[in-house]
Length: 99
Image: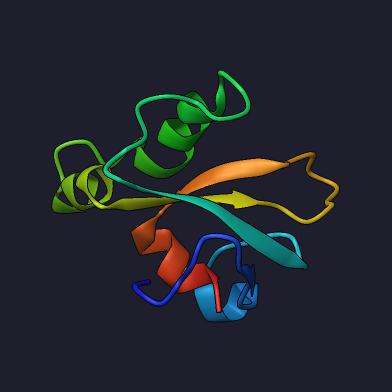
């Protein structure tokens, strides 16, 4: 995701293409962090949610270390029925989901 830039908008690939079910619409990239974020941006639970969503179950695996140490992307979500406004996404997921 070297070509992804903070402030730019990105759309998602389909569930069939990516294997991830993200709401349709444009996502604004707000922040890029190297390694798992150390402090929340908008909500105190966002890091707990990110850890549960993307790292839980990977402990001890190569993928866990890759995701933990790799870049994390903070996206502003489009209006959606899930009630998600912002979310941290690891690079391994972002490259599969966003165009």
